[in-house]
View 1 (cartoon, rainbow, N blue to C red):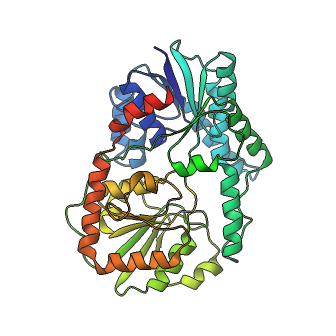
View 2: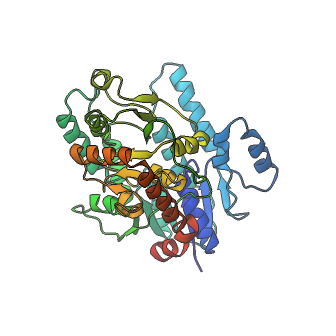
View 3: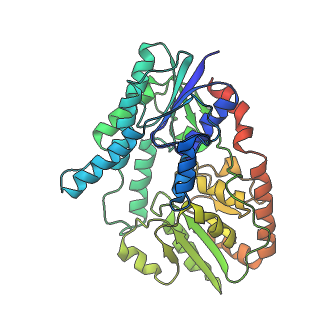
Length: 403
């Protein structure tokens, strides 16, 4: 029985989840990634010890990948990061780190020995071109993971929102450079199957000349990493938003809805980088608290302390924060423009509001603030929903859809 070779540059949570699913089904030929460790053995034990001081290392310890199936390329990831830092320090033209990591990893994997039982390769957008070209020469299947909506959808979204919110950004609306568009197009053309996590991402491919079948496989909830809270939050009514805050994420609608809601004795907490113009944000001065960065190890406490997570995205491939918050028992207000419909039954274990609908947003925020016990009950239902679709539950559907 042929296996699937999974390739990802930096052991992302989703790629690790997919690789583990395939391993449990006996269908993983190899998992090529950057810095990563098995739990057993001295490298894994050293990484676990070092994680006390650097918690992010825990994300690189992979207990579910069988011995011999994990193929790490630390020299590619660490070397690329070092080169980019060196160029930046020298004041020389510097590539975007993401682009450098993904292309370097793709180049390395395309030249590495592959297990003989490999029947198909599963690679991610921007890190698949040369790997797919080799797979095509060898007659292997090529599964392309699209983690975000198609780039044309994202570009149109940025342009439209820049018009809707004049002065909200002090840089040109997002647009991929020509070389990167060409690379993405070539990867998609080579794919024999396209994997997306939400119906929204699948919709973004409609109208394009996509010959490969498109399969939707929602991510599993990370219930092992997030403990459910046992009591309702106390003190001020608190709304939390986690991630990059920009036009695509719908942040202006959140800020405007929060200001209009004018909920007494309440706080809005933004965690993550703010990519909006200062002059625009000054309109909402005093209406929110901002933390540019919070360690992933500390996020669970943030989720647990909030009454609600707000995620008013206008275009996401999924939105992992939805699942993280629900795993903590914190209900989510989001839109259908991402993984919301795959995770939430509206009004039962969270809420779906129309995109860009400030009035609907205000109404939902006010309801949650006025009914904190009911909101907490929805959070309990969210955790129950999470427990019904973990990465272990993804196994059969993933194997059936992709192999």
